[in-house]
Length: 479
Ligand code: PMP
Image (cartoon, rainbow, N blue to C red):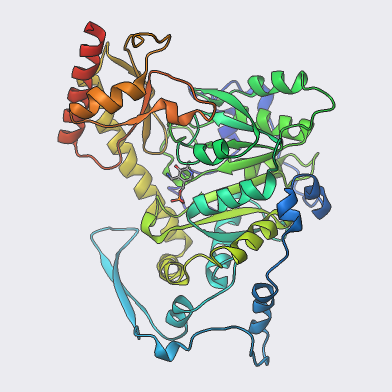
C-alpha cells in the first residue's frame, strides 16, 4: 500500500496517528482504515473552487505571454526565435566540478562534474516553475515522502527559498479586509509580511502538541454569518520556528476536519520536515492526511518545503506543492518579478540529487536530523547546568529551536515580563543574543519568551551562552 521508504528513514505509517507517546495523543479518535486495496481514485477539488480564495490582483494578473510560451520551445522539431536568451558560448564557465560528501559515509567524497547540457541548463534562463529535471525529481520525492500521486491534481514549483513562494502565495490569496488564521508563536521572518497587510489576523495558540484546534473551532462556531470566513491557516507543523514543537497527528486531523467544515485552506510551511528526530514516527504531513480520508476531496493544502536546511541555505531554493490553480497564480507572480529561481543553483542541486538518488537523499536527511538531535541534547545539557529555576523550556523533537521562558518579573510600568527589553539591553551587554518572543506574535504581545537556536554552537559556547543568560535572568530577578 505505501510507497517504499529507505529502512532507516522515519517511515510514514498510520500508527503515527495512534501513537501514545507523550507528544501524540489517545488513539480512539484516530483509526483511519487504509485497508481497502481497491480504494477509489482520490477526488480533488475542481479548478474553479479556488476562485473564491484568489485575491483580486491575482485574478487580474495576466500571464506574461512570453514566459508561458517558453515551454513550447521544448517541442521536438520547433525552431525557436522566441526567447531573448544569451548565447552560452559567450559565457565564461565551460565546466564546473565540485566535491561532495557521500550521504552514506561522510568520510567518502566524490567529484561531480557539470558540463554540456547539464551545465548549459544551469547557465541559461529556464522555465518559471523551475528546471524541468529538478521539478520532476522533486515531484517524485513528494510522491515518495507524502504518498500522493502527481497526476492527482497537484504539482511543484521552485522558489528562491521557500520564503519566496510563501510570500507569493500569501499575496495571491489575500485582499484587504480578508481574515486569516496564523498559528502563534509564528515564524518571526514571515510575521512582518502579515503585519504589513490590511487584513484581519486571528492568532491561534499552540502548546506542546502543536496548534490547538479548539481555539479555532470556538472562533468559527461563533463567526458572524455574513462575514467571510478566514481564507487560510498558516502553520508550521514540524519543529516549529520558533517553538520547536511538532504538531501531533490527532491535532492535524482535527485541523483538517475544521478546514473542510469551514472551508479554509491550509498553508503548511514545513522546512523542518526532514529534521525530525523524535522517538515516535513522524506524523504524516497535512498534504498526506488530506488524501487519506476519501470522504472529502483533496486540494486544501498548499505545502512549502525548503532545501535550505538540508542542502544549503545559500542555494536559496525551496518549493511549493499544491493545486494547479494556486500554483499557476504563484508562477504568474514569479514570471513578473524574478522570472524563476536561479538556474545555476538548481543545476548544482539537481546534479547532487541525481548522484545520490532517493536512497541517498533519505540517508543524507537522516544524518542531518541526527546531527541536530545531538546538538539539541548538547544544548539541553547546557540549560540543565545553568538555567534551572531561571528559565523553562520544551525539548523539541525536530528542527533547531528551543522556546525558552525566562523567569523574570515584569518590567516597571508593565504587566508582563518583557524579554525584548532584556535581550536588547542587558543580555546584549552581557554578550548573548536570542530572538525576543515579541517578534513571533503578529498582533504584538509583550512576553517572557525567547527563541534560541542550537544549530551552530559547540558545547563550550552553548555553556557560555547559558551561563551569561543565567546571570542576566538572576540580575533581573534580584532587581
Ligand atoms: N519558513 C520557516 C518556518 C523558516 O524557519 C524559514 C527559514 N528560517 C523559512 C520559511 C524560509 O526558508 P528558506 O530559506 O527556504 O527561504
